[in-house]
Structure formats: structure tokens, C-alpha cells
Length: 345
Figure 1 (cartoon, rainbow, N blue to C red):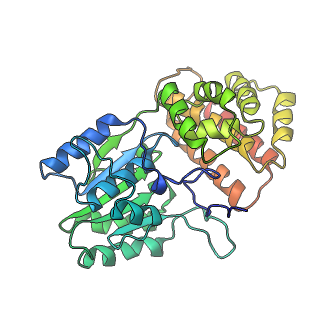
Figure 2: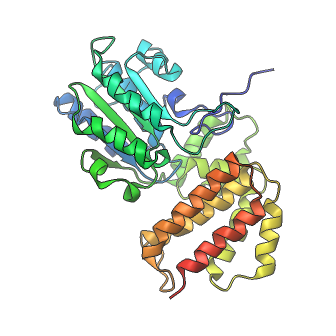
Figure 3: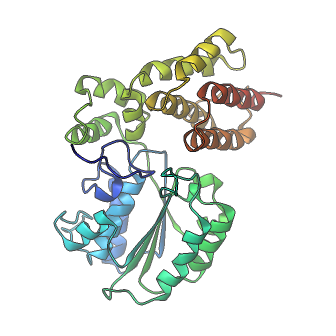
């Protein structure tokens, strides 16, 4: 029997983690910007890669890391380093001596904590304070900044303010607007757009070799409902994900006049769920908030100033549900209570 893949915050089931993915779909503009800067000898010391969850931000970060640590060993106008290149193999295994990755890792209980420990962030200064082991660049990936508390962010900022030569930070964020202005101001912004439905299907096709349980007949439906996020498409394809998404959207569109029976029914459906259905619920709510915050959908009843706070409550509830094994039905009611609060005059 094949061993289960390690528990990682950016891995979905048996799919390859971003560090292992050598085929990046989409984001050609961002790739071209990095390659042009590299060829001109003007690569910024920090790139802040932002966008919705599941669109390939971490995959892009690792692609850039492979390219830089390989010394630019890719065809012209490309970042694609051959998977057999020593740097590519080392990045995939997180064994490259000049690569540091800050991310959530399993704690003593075998679960992922909700935040990146601040003590892990403090090691960045010593990493960049030493000479590059292979004499080239040193690269630090932060996946994600959203999972770093104020103490950790301030520790990171100290190195960002005085970057050494041939040092590169690749910072990933799902919510650029919530980051410290002092961090944003020291980075080159790399905002990524959601993938097209065709690109989502392309990624799903590629993942099917690693995830034999994927139903190809549902790829198009999942891609259409995913909002351009591969992670969301995978979540929707798990169990009752698509049905939960549709039920959640009906309730969201009815705010603040939500039918109590329908809300209870949704909570019951999610009770005991430890898979994709609850994540589908959370993703649908986050998408609704994002649509209103960015103006893709406009409703006079929604107070935009309160949306970042509600988004944070939803995200924290989702993380706490996994970390503390909380009751899903209770969380559904908490989230809708927060949404109702945002609609109050």
C-alpha cells in the first residue's frame, strides 16, 4: 500500500504539493515579468504574490525558486526548469541548502497549527546572514503571510528592510489588503488573476494521474463553479461539495432574511463532515465576500467597511474547525451571524 503524502497546508489530498509541481498553468504575465527582470539583472529582492486561494500562487513561488536556484537554467523567455535538474529535485524535497520555506508544519500532536510559529520566522535573519552554500542566490518562501501573526510579521520585516545581496523573498498571500503596509511597500507586487475554466480543467486533467478517484465527467461543472480556483474545484468534487455550494449560495443571496429551516438543514448536512463539504461551504462564503468587496457584485445592503473583518472571522473559523475539531453546525450559525452583522445599518 502506498504511503499517504505528508500533511502540508498547501497540499490537497494525494495531489502533488506546489513544491513538487513542475507544470505551471496560467500566470504568463507574472512569469514574463520575473524572467525579464532576471535577464536584465534587476530581479527585486522581494516578490509579493497575491490572489485567491488555489490559483497557483505557491506553485509560481516554487517555480521562481527553482529557476533562481538553478542559475536560470530554463529556455529563453521561460521559468521552466527541467524536473531532473539538481536544483529542481532539491526544491521538491525541500533539501536545497540555499532555500528556506516558512510554512505551517505538523505539531507534536500531528496536526497543523493555525499560524506559522514566530520562532521559525526569526531564523530568517541567520539564514540570510550566512554565505550561500552553493555560492549563488538564497531564497526564502513564505507560504503564507496570512498565517503569520504580528510578532512573526515584524520579525520578517527586519530582514526585508535590509536585504543582503542575491537574496530573494517569495511571499504568498490570499489577502493582500490585510498585510502590513510596511511589508507591502518593500515588495514588488505580483497580483495573480483567477484561472479560466479551461485552465482549471487542464490542471484537473493533470492531477487525475495522482488522484485516480477524480470523476472526469464532473470537471467542467466543478471548473465553472470554482471561481478559477483549482483547490475550490477539488473541494467541490469531494462528496456533497457541489450541493453544499448551491445551498449556501441560496442562503447568502437571501441575507439578511435567511430561512431558519434551510440554515438548520445546511448545518445538519455539515455536522460530522471532515472532508470537502465544509470546505466548500467556507469557500462559497469567502467567494461571496470577495465578490462584494471587489465590486464584482454590488448590494446596497452590504457595508463594505465591515467585510474584511467578516472575512477574517470566516477564515479563522475554518482553521479552528480543523485544528480544534469544532462542531460544524455551530460554526455555520456563527458565520451567518457575522454576515448578518455586516448588513446592519
